[in-house]
Image (cartoon, rainbow, N blue to C red):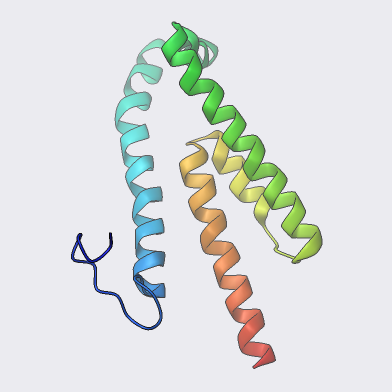
Length: 127
């Protein structure tokens, strides 16, 4: 499959650490820009934060996407809590806040970056 997409396979796998980190950071920044472009102007115009939140439930399709977001945030929260206690990953709470605003895509991406950094630092110390 990866060869069909012309992604080079190496001994270490199809993706380098640098590309992984860049892609995760890009996703967080991209979502933040899209969120700000789509949400901030109408929110400023209306000033109704609760109405903006409730708009995610205007029909069954929107409600389905909103439910997915809430459950994804919950899964992220469980993971952050679990790894805080088992892997001593710190500052996950910041990711949970960013998972609320601007959104789970940013909170999750930031958690992956923080987690990667802390685990890598720990491995370097033990090497």
